Image (cartoon, rainbow, N blue to C red; front, side):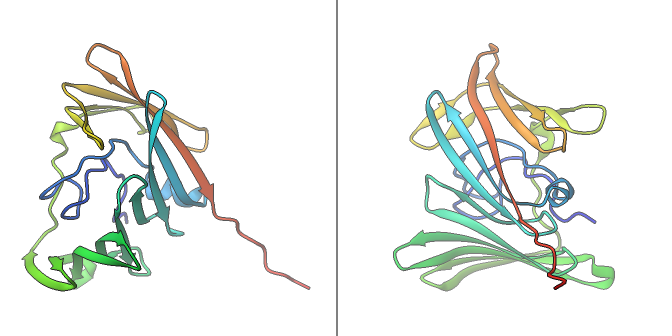
Length: 222
């Protein structure tokens, strides 16, 4: 069972989940499915969004199941963390701000399950000065509308192209119009790199993927 499989876009961090509420667009790219990350023992990933000679990094951390546990753009203070039950069901997600001597939570999402571990409801909370200032409970999780992001897959199901509209990056960098991301894969199934083109076919963003593997040691039999 998959609870988080593909991160379609990185569009935070003002109110939490990608695509919900206020947004600060940072980058647009896929991350491998959890099964591929787990099979390759990936513990962290850095995706560099390079525009010319300038690169903006996005850092990810994963658990042994390949599920995302932390997402942090290097250029801004807000970041997000995830918690899971042992069977892989998502338990909670927190949007935090890194500041001064301690980090503060400004929004959270909590997942409650019912019979047969089916998702029963989701609780969204907003915080100010450590206090809950708003709480909403829904019977299902808000969903990102994927209709605006059509994809092309290869014969084994890997996404090799996505279509996006306007792209927004920090420092006022905006690319208007239709854009296409094309992905290239390693033999082990991990994304090797990606390239974003505008509707004139000009390359505007290079996506560079750098993985760190979990080093597993064999038990000492001596």
